Length: 198
Image (tube, rainbow, N blue to C red; front, side, top):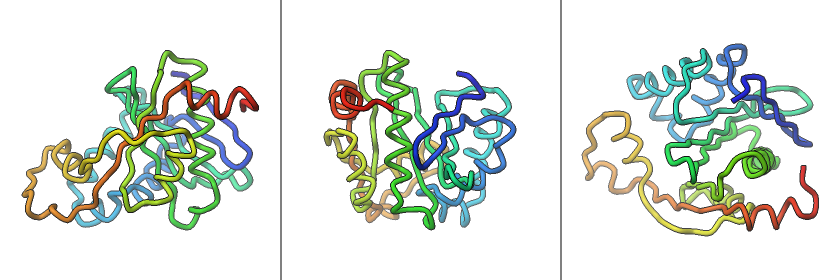
């Protein structure tokens, strides 16, 4: 992965995370993440992603590829997008936009230009998109990208367990349900790139 990789859209710029933008990325990530409230009340929970992000920016790679999403006009960081290649054939996307920049089409455009880059340059046939079922905007973006629903689960509990923390299932019984979409290369490329690839 080229540390200087930058992808340009009409509204946003995606910059691959490196040392020069790590502070902006961390600030945006902590505030935009679905776990932002958890990070505030559980500092130990924030330490793990913070450490991994800093390590990544300093060249210690893991299974994720991370980008800062910036508004093209102002160059202000407005969100982040990551692809987790734990399953190299089906990477999972994680995207979040700061609340004050939502509803401007930034998440859709950032996803679209990243997916075009991945599908054109890698041997990936499918990208996985997880969303809270209550997050209608995220579900609409997944569907607009050509995503098909394949599974429902509880990512909140899974994330807390992945952080090595104990989970009392009763406490999280009402945690929001999540839905998993698969965005296939064939459907995506037919939808976007046969007509007007970016």
